[in-house]
Amino acid sequence: MKIEWRSKYQIGIEAIDNQHKYFLELISRINEQLYLSPDAETIKRFMNELIKYAEFHFCSEENIMYFEKYPGLKIHHNLHSEILTQLHERMIFSDIALDLESMKLLVQFLIDWFSKHTIEEDKAFADFLKNKEV
Ligand SMILES: [Fe+2]
Image (cartoon, rainbow, N blue to C red):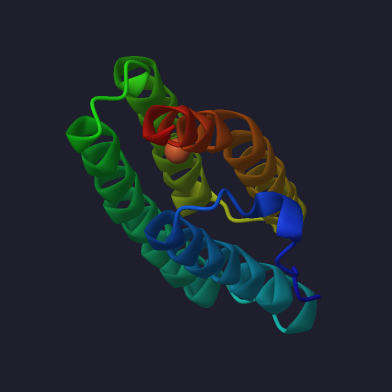
């Protein structure tokens, strides 16, 4: 099942929106694989790619915040670190035993996290930028 991009995810900063679209595509790819022909090695490889992309994306987003002197940067950085720690921990568990149901839960967790983080936290930065320009 493909996970579609929704307009509510759009924060209005092109560089970040483009990365978010790709991030969602990576989640979607895992989701589709899980419902098609899930094999542990493929899922693990896709998850590793997603984690590495998340690391890049967070770094990129935080750099934009840094250069814009965003006062919420530190808190935002902590939120990014938190999710990365959680993903790494879950991948260690999945090394021991990758079961399909827990992977489906992990994908759902990722979708929920992405949606909430983008709409609330990243949008707050976009609002800050907008007010700064006025
Ligand atoms: Fe973020």
